[in-house]
Image (tube, rainbow, N blue to C red; front, side):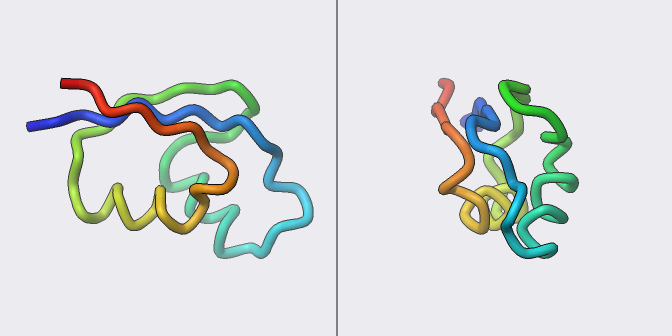
Length: 60
């Protein structure tokens, strides 16, 4: 199964609460923090909600 490396590159200040909640669910609480996730529909949904704040890389 593919994995996704996600990095928070833009601050969520000034964005709606639901987008901040999506970042918190992903565990991205500080700028430049990176996490690796399994590629599941739930993770993809959270990433899609805040894609404008993230940098996403697909790992094999």
